[in-house]
Amino acid sequence: MIWNVVGAYPVRWEVSEFNAEESKLAVETIELKYRYFTIPTSLASLGL
Image 1 (cartoon, helix red, strand yellow):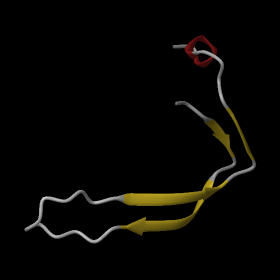
Image 2 (cartoon, one colour):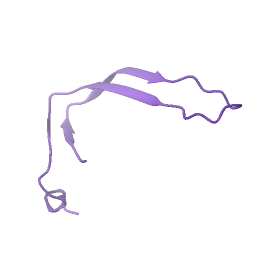
Image 3 (cartoon, helix red, strand yellow):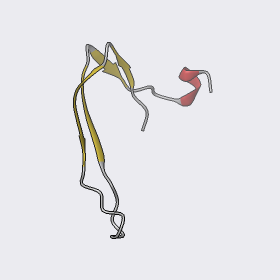
Image 4 (spheres, helix red, strand yellow):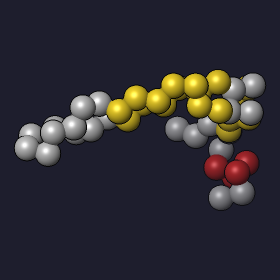
């Protein structure tokens, strides 16, 4: 999925606990404030 996000800035950032002795994933979460976003209808609209 692709989003074009305009005027975005982070307001919250979290990282799950990490233990190198366990085989678990570390999960990073970021929350953004933004003015607006659009979803391109095709990759051609992005010049790809």
